[in-house]
Length: 103
Image (cartoon, rainbow, N blue to C red; front, side, top):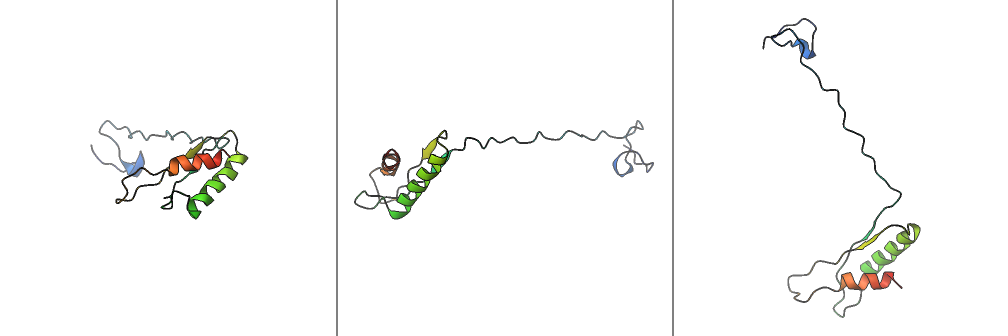
């Protein structure tokens, strides 16, 4: 490839055949998002030692319920909390939250 400054191509680069290198003009398609049906995601949180919901989890569930009522066509996704290393039994958070939502 030889370099000439004759006004052809970017920075005056011209291929050996005398043609300027092609520059791609393709743009990615715009991302189209549908916000008409959002998903409601309620993050879990650890339960109290006696199995009841902690205040932060109760607040999350009730807030998620309020949002779900504004968007009744939307799916509600409830996650469980992570287990602490000392806990051997499975956490019931994922089962407790849906029960509150169905009341």
